[in-house]
Amino acid sequence: MHANKKLSLIFLCLMPIMNTLAQTKNKVLSAQESDPVKMGWMQGFPPPADKIVTAIDGSFFQFPALRYSVCHMNQFLPTSIVQASQNNRYTVVSAIDNNIDSVTFLPWNSNKKITWKESLDINYTDGIIILHKGKIVYERYFGALQPEGIHAVMSVSKTFTGTLGGLLVSEGVLDENKTASEYVPELKNSAFGNATIKEILEMTTALQYSEDYANPNAEVWAFSAAGNPFPKPKGYKDATNYYDYLKTVKQNGKHGDAFAYKTINTDALGWIISRVTGKSIPQLLSERIWQPLGTHHDGYYQVDGAGIAFAGGGFNCNLRDAAMFGEMIRNNGHFNGKQILPVQVISDIKKGGSQEAFAKAGYKDLKNWSYKNMWWITHNHDDAFAARGVHGQTIYIDPTAEMVIVRFASHPIAGNAANDGNSLPAYQAVADYLKIY
Image (tube, rainbow, N blue to C red; front, side, top):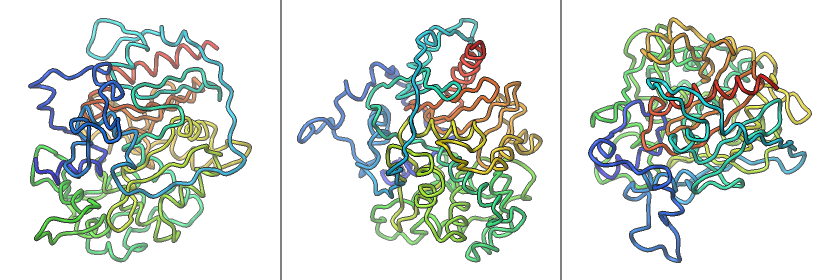
């Protein structure tokens, strides 16, 4: 893989297929063995040559160095700040329940139960927090992540963008039945031109766009090259930022027919949102959600060479702050003494999208799920729903158990399929445990 392709990985957070040669040909380091602090990445003044990782050659986003980088993305890339609250910051009560460590569950495709605590290392957890009825009942940090630290949330970024989109629809700023080109005329000749806002929000657009990382000709490489903030190679004549790339996307099929999870939907939505509000995604997220939450820490987005935020996967934030976002959603938009999002926005998410359209995507382990406003809806007996990102990021909300789980992780395989079997049943086991109280 060329260096510029390695570099572009940071701009993509949905990776359904990842090159697993390192996992198949060599022994994968365990969570303990790959602890970034123990490995000494970027430690020293200057660090030893063999402990330096960089965006120049893409080494910063290769496992195990990835475990350091996800906690320090602003050391490698240009970013745009999502300002936290300067006053009226949230307060939260802790009532730690160490018995959660002993909760057991049966992973998928296994006949042996494991404990919640054992699952944390299996999934290369960097930080995890559980809220029950608004109280912190569990909180752990590992590796390079500290309680005051910031971590890349990968595709959980999509959920923040989708929630902003849902908010604007509820306010009438966006009409979900209008097409993208009605808001951004520059998209008229692209596949997004005749796609409705609803189809973009639910990712039922029909796009000629592959995120198959094993295919050197997949469109994902052109998208990531466009978003690369560093100087383009000599002779490069293609799109030089995210928006310019979106104008080139071709249609393949009928919009609205099938769910297809593709990152560029979120970046198209980000463009539409910025055009109608006159504000960047980092600014709007700060004003409408991050500051009203009373967050304690600035977040930030990775940006391209034109300063455009990577709406589909570039957000980085604090674990507790992310948990409070989840708690606000669980409480139907109310948090920190105020109604931050209209109840209608949350109820619309909970209803979910088309299960028939979702089924056509072929997720055999996610039966009966759907996708709405860039949230994953399980439609299980607890009505749980989640934000999900590669390498193990999640905001998992179980309304029946009155529970929110937020996990930041750095799993060596960039795909939810690598950790769902040890995660989704674990979340349900903890939910069932907490229902007793």
